Length: 194
Image 1: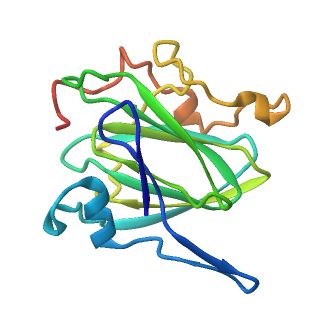
Image 2 (image 1 turned 180 degrees about the vertical axis):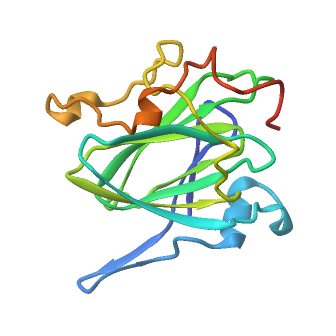
């Protein structure tokens, strides 16, 4: 597995080995031992994933930025198995030197890359292809009481969404995402994230 780090401590871009020939390909999309090595932790320190999620989105759909507060925070391992997305993680750990900063990467069915998003980060993505199927593992159960959203186009975050790739379309948002607060108003009380 190829492991790439970002300037922000925590998120990682992981690309599993691909074995391809004229018949198609094979890859190990999840291996706890390889994941522990990528994170630099012992096997028993790997986060336990409690649920797998699958979303399908059409071109221009922007989902997020989403996160969950304790007692049910979520770390996520995200991959795009059909189409292409621009995937983003925003640091919400108030004590972090990179608080309010973001990282992003294109995940697609061609590059097979996965984005590791630790607890304490908001997550969102923009669909770049006609449609995209996104699968992700979550370390916490979904909780309506813990779920929060952050404004995708908050000027303070200055996320460089590749909107030019939408051919003039405006991003399509869920009502809760369209009404999400800026970082200065978002509920990230105290140092709730490690």
